[in-house]
Length: 600
Image (cartoon, rainbow, N blue to C red; front, side):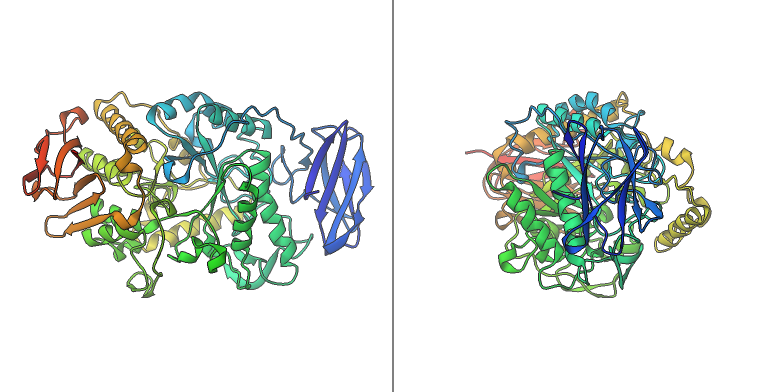
C-alpha cells in the first residue's frame, strides 16, 4: 500500500504515513463522527491502519505524539486550503481510454497552459470546451503548470505543499480526471508539471513527521529536500510514488520535472536516475510515459540511459535554444542573455541543442555544460516563449509587446521548423496581448514582503526599474493575465492560421518528422543575420535582419512550401520564387522565414 489515505470501498479506508520522528501517531477523523484511531508502527518509520465507517469526503488530520495535529503529507485533497484538514477521496473512475497509447515523443506538439488563467473560470472543467480549438490548431499535447495544492487561489503552482493533492480552486480530483479523459478522447496527451526540488513556504507541515529536509545543502527556498542523507530512502519513495501516482491514478502521459538543477544529491545512484527507472518499469508492457526535465546544467547525463550513468529521462527543456532565438529577435543582452546574440549561437543549437558545451559563459563567469553526444531532436523541447520567460519579465510581457508582426511569424517558424520537440505557451498562437505575470495569494505578511523583495532582486540583473514592478500579491496582476481568446483582428487571425499551417506541416510532412540531428546542416550568415537550415528533403532560411537578403539555393530542385511574408499571412508580399534550383538566387524579405521542399 502506498502512502496517504486510500479508500477501499464500502466506507473502508487505509491510512499510511511516514513519521520516523513520532513516538505515537493517530488519525483524527473529523466526520461523520469525531474519532481518534491509533496507527500501528511498521518498518522504516511508517505507520498505518485500516478504519471502517469512513465514507469518501471524510475530513481528517494526523495527531503526532498525542497533541500536534497536522494534515496528511500525501493528502489527495485539501478542500479547505493548505492549512485545513485533508480529505478522503474515492479514486475509482470509469476510464474509457483503454485504447489510448500516447504518441511517440518526437510527434509531440506541446501547448503549455496555466489552469487558473487559461479561461475566465480558471478550472479543469472550463478547459474541456476549449480542447476543440486546440485540436483544430493541431495541438496533440497539453502541459499543465503545477496543480498540486498551494496556498490561496492565485499561484503559478510552484509553491505547492501537498504534492498528491489537487488544487481546490481548480476543481476536484474527479474534475482533473474528467479533463484527462476528455483530452484522450480528443487525441491529446497530458503532461503534468511537478516540483520535486522544494516545497512552498506556506502550509509546509512536513517537519515534525520526519527528515524530509537536510541542512547539508541550501537552496533558494531554504534547506534542501533530503535525497542523499540519513532516511533519504523513504524521502525518495515519497516522490517516486508521487510520480507513479499521477501516471497511474490520473492517466497522465508525461511529467515535466521542475528545475532539477536544484535537486542536491551526490549519491552513487541519484534519485533522478531511480525515478527514471521507475517510470520506465511502469511503461514496460503498456504504453510509453515520459520524463521531461527542466535543467540549466547543459548536462547530457540527464538524457543518457542509466546503463551509461545517466538519469534515463527522455527529454529536457532547452533554454539555450530559447535564449539564442530571443536575443536575435529582440536584441536584448542583459542578464543571462549576455551569453547569446549571434546567428552562430542559434546555428549551434539547431545542430545539437546545447550552445554551451564546456566553454566559458560570461554570465556565469565560468565554463558551462558538456557535449550532448548521441542525442536526437526528441531529447530537447524548444520554444520561443514559456511561462518563465514571460512571467519573469518586468510586466509579464509577451513577445507581442516587443516584436513587430513579421518577427512574431519568424519566431513561430523558427520553433516549429526546428528538429526538436516544439512547445507553445498559451495564447502565443494568435498573438495574445495580455501579459502573463507572476502572482501569489499568500496569507503571511512577512512571506508576502519576502516575495516582493525577491522579485526586486531578481530583476536587478536585467536593469529593470524597481518602481515599475507589479505587486505579485495583488489580484489585478492575476486578472490581467487571463487569456482573451480573441483573434478577430486580421493580424491575430493570420498568425493563428500560420501556426496551424506550420503545425500541420510538422505533423504530416515526412521531412519534418525526421528528428535525427546528424542529418541537419546549418549555415549561419552573421553579416546578413540569416540562418540557413538544411534537412533531408527540405531547407529553410530565417532572416532576422530588418533588411531583405538574397541567398543561393542549396543543391537540388525545390518547391516553395511557405513564406511568412506572403499576403496569406498578412505579410508585405513574398520575394522568394515558387521554384528554385541549385545556385538560383532566393530573395528573402526582412524578418521572414521561407521553407522549400525537394522535388523528386
